[in-house]
Image 1 (cartoon, rainbow, N blue to C red):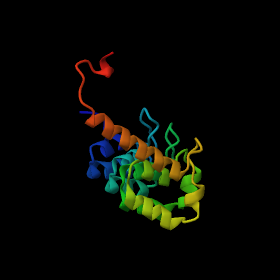
Image 2 (image 1 turned 30 degrees about the horizontal axis):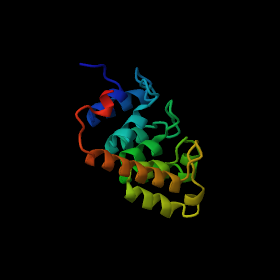
Image 3 (image 1 turned 135 degrees about the horizontal axis):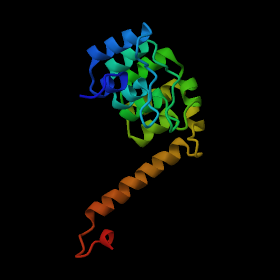
Length: 174
């Protein structure tokens, strides 16, 4: 069995053990809620990425750092958007503003929702900041409409690739 810590509890979706770890961390005994994995994710970031609402809420209740970012410049909102978890997104936005989250991430939450085709999140983020949709850009300078176009192009290419007859020797084998 692996070591008991907040990251492992989140990975196993073990709320009971996570609450014990959080309580001990709060009391200054042995545990650190801000320990990171090999990607720089804290337990809260990992919970958001996996869409583990109860784990994320528990960590937030015990003071998990809502301002944490991983090594890729992703924050809790970015990762919850990747998971497509609207209730978790709303919980995070109760504790930190949408604008503040987006200013601290390399990829704004709306951009992530567009790339992952999470239309409910796209609509929600657009409702939060209607004017911001036109100005939202990734750190690479890609806007929302450009991302949508890239996703449509990728879908067309994938469809063409699937419908193409198989050759005796596939190009991918050359």
